[in-house]
Structures are given as C-alpha cells and as structure tokens.
Image 1 (cartoon, helix red, strand yellow):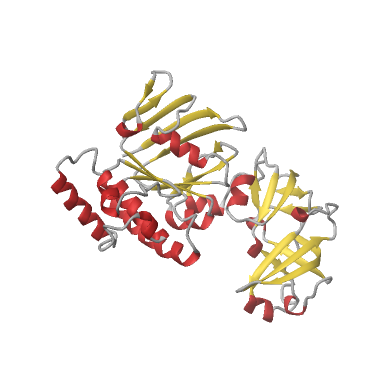
Image 2 (cartoon, rainbow, N blue to C red):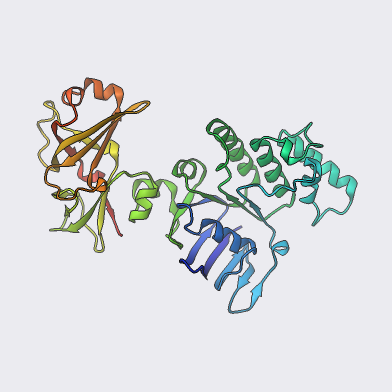
Length: 365
C-alpha cells in the first residue's frame, strides 16, 4: 500500500506545494500553525480541491488535474480524524460508531454487533448511550478513531489529535494510539506541530514551512541532521546564526562574530548554522586539550528549569544585539553543580564555551 501526493493550491496568503510519498508506515508532517498541514490533509481527503497535481492511493488515482479526475470524499476510502473529532453532537456513541458502517454494512443487526465490538476494543463499553457532550476529551477521541476504523479506510490521517488535551491525558492516549496504529497496519499521515510527538510516533517525516513541504526523510535523520533553517528550528534547536562558508571546512558565524571549524566540507548553498543547547560546553580547567571552536561569552541570564540549568550568554565578538544572536547552553543540574566553572558562574561573568565541529548543523535558508 502507498500514497503519492503532488499538489499545489493558491491560498492567497501563500501557495501550498506538497510533494511526498508514503508507504505502509506512519509518516509525519511537522510544521507551525498556519503553514498548510491541515489544508494538505483536506486536499487528500477530497474536502478541498487542489488547483493542480495528482493524488494516488494504492495505485488508484483520486485526483488528477490534467485528466480531470476528482473522486468525491466518500469514494476515496480515507479516514480523517479532525482536531475537534467532528462527532455528531445529537447522536449517542453507538449511533456515531454506526455512521462509520453506513457505507458498507446495510444490515442493522450486524452493524450494531460490529459497533459493540469496536466499543469494547476502544474501552467505550458502558458509554454507548451517552452523547459526545457527556464524554471526556479522551473518550471523544476514542469514539472518533473507532468510527473511522469502522469505515475500513485504506489511508488514515490524523490532524493534531492531541492538541486539545492536557499533558497527562495526551501521554496516555498517545500510547493507546500507537497500539491502534500498529493494528491498522496501513499508511498513516500524522500531522503535528509537536516535534516530540513526531519523533515518538512516526517512522519518517517532512517539514512544512509557509506552504512548502521538504523531502521526506527518516525521523531520526530529520532531528540529527536537519537540512534547512525551518527544519532545524522545528526540531527544537535553539542556537543558530547566519553563516558564510570560508575555506573548505570552516564557516564564519556572523551573529556570533567567530569563525568555526565544521569537521567536514561545507556544501554550497549553506546560509546558516545551528547548534543544540546541550552541545555547547563550558570550558573548565580539566579540558586543556581543547584549542579550536572556542567562544568567549558574557553570561546574561541563568535560569533554573525542572531538571536542567539554562544559561543565556552573548559572544563578546558579536555585534548583533538581538535575542536570536545569544547562545543558549543547557545542562543537567547535577552536571552544573559539579562543574568547575559552571557551578561558580554568575550573571555578568565571562566564560569560554566550546563547540565540537561535528555538532555544528549546516543549514540552507
């Protein structure tokens, strides 16, 4: 089973341009609010019509602008779980579930039996006669997902399924959802603005930025080696600087005012670099072997988090006063407490930090 998508749509504020292919896997679409993630799902489902392009599911063409093919949603066999779950508020849980059987099971007795089996599978037994307004957010999500699976879709699409849930319930339902997705076994598109959800749930993913989707890559590669500024920022990187390639393996970080060794050839088209907060190290007396990629900084702020210490520092060679030019260091409290320099450091102190060449991310704008 596979899904092929190549679509474009003019949305006024920006142009949607999505091109990707997904196999029997959970593929993520990561992006900030308003970047076109939900619109992409609606175009695939047939709720919205692209201006041009093709959508092919398991060898069957759902949409082709050149061939004038545009199958209606009910003929696409796709299940879309909306952010608000889209349950019928005037129907009971049982009737909502039976709506998922409407297209292929006409016998009411068999339909009720199938709905009851699905209710048991999703821990909804005893709630069959309640309406959506009488259910918790987690119970509503279970009903919505169960209804979709009763439709026997060939493609499952989940649009920010945890966005309206609190932290504890979100984690609990995420574990449940991962089990259900394993049972489904087909192609799943999982849309989220949460990098953590994408990392835990998806096998591969693309980043959507201002309507344009990047190529699909394995999830670990997206986080370990992001190729663009948008992917880097969405993956959680907090330190980045405009950069100019120098000789071979070096770049000049303009925002920090320093030249850095990258440990490998710098490709053409690199406009920025990024460094994750945990990979910027405070130099201490027990690190005399370190000679390159050292930046002198002044500590501007020290913030105590639940488990980590966060240090905001400004390069002494930087001419950029903006917050984005600051360096953010992060380390476990235990490490901070025993660190020769860190444990004694105070706001206003000058420290020297070091970046391993291989921890520098080379990015396109």
